[in-house]
Length: 352
Ligand SMILES: Cc1cc2nc3c(=O)[nH]c(=O)nc-3n(C[C@H](O)[C@H](O)[C@H](O)COP(=O)(O)O)c2cc1C
Ligand SMILES: CC(C)CC(=O)C(=O)O
Image: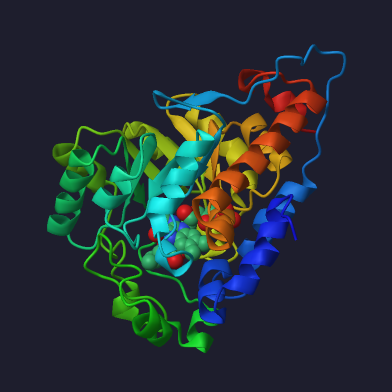
């Protein structure tokens, strides 16, 4: 099958990946309610197209922070790309560059942030999990030296959630046996799978509070972005703490199950932020019309997680590039059909 949309890539990737890897990439927490809601919430939104607009020069280009990108679509941080492809994140970022997108590199990448940086010319941000402060400080230093342009602190993971697919598959043992370095490119803590409570707490720690932002600021001059905001209250705090951006996200339905979908949280967050920092959104983006809806409700750009892993598994960097280009082309068509020739023209009035 020649893949023509992201759903095709999903089918092809499942055929290629071992069951425990597929389930780790694909799964959510508990009953996977949030995982399904992330898609369902997009499907419930209705568009209000305008007609007889000159869309001859329709263009998806935009910028995030100060970087220009060909499309308002970035790669969300996902761990362990080495289980999808031998070249792992180095192939992923080459695909991002080739498409004119950019990548947020996970703390738990298979390859080191330096190796990934060497494979890339374009936008790269570093996603941080804080296990211990000295280790985080080391990682920030390394990220700055390797030319990363922002630090993305994930704030929805004081505890890694219960993921029952991984438990049933004995994913921890599988990964240690077949991919022992899959999560170990940057972090010293590399467990995944059947974890006890203290192991599940190592990623962001129970003790992080808003004070961590002042600490981060003493250790980096890079822009700070918070990933995993779902309420106007926390968005307001993020603005007060002067972050450069927030990512409206429920971690792709992999952390707290039963949350509001990010696309449903976006309107109240956009109203609270009032342009004081950039807003991005991830979770369930699979079509150009999903991107359009997120932009209309106040996102500057969106991020995609699983579809990138599917593209990587099917065809390495070419697959990643193709997934991004498909989504860009779908967005382009949607912009033409709703009468929004530029990203700036995409406004709230497009949504019923
Ligand atoms: C396999 C996998 C690994 C992930 N690893 C990380 C990670 O290391 N850090 C992080 O902040 N988010 C991580 N996420 C969450 C993604 O950044 C993102 O929020 C989510 O995948 C978006 O939803 P989507 O997959 O529906 O596009 C991961 C998600 C998946 C599917
Ligand atoms: C290593 C994990 C904590 C990566 C992650 O965030 C996830 O699997 O959702």
